[in-house]
Amino acid sequence: QPVLGLGFFQWLAKAGFTSKFLWIGSLAKPDVLLAVLVGALMFLGMAMMPGAAAETSRLILLFAFVAVTVATVAAMPSAIGIYWATSNAFAIVQALVLRSLLGRQRRALA
View 1 (cartoon, rainbow, N blue to C red):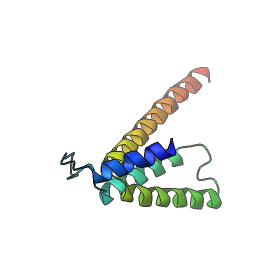
View 2: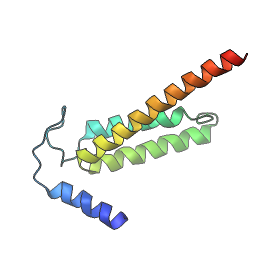
View 3: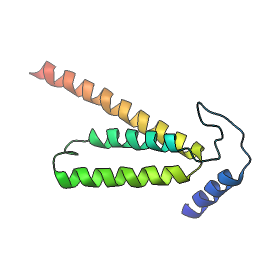
View 4: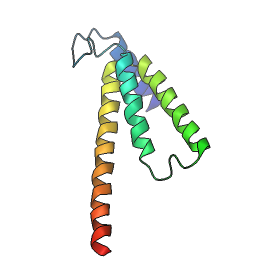
């Protein structure tokens, strides 16, 4: 699968897409603002995990992982970044809904 994925990324990069989405001029070209957005969403999603910011070493690892993600997405076609941002946004919404439901359940049991 990694070979197929790399081939797909190369095809997107070389394709002459002129599709525009939001502020992104071409889905085939990288976009730095999108990469930062993906990094912010990833940081938020990971920070919401229990114990994510409990220790300094975990927090440093979290920042390092987000920095590598931003650098990676900044080099990929924007279409991949949009997918990644959307996936992270849905995961955050799901986590917030689950937290809300669990909070209601705990209050009902107390």
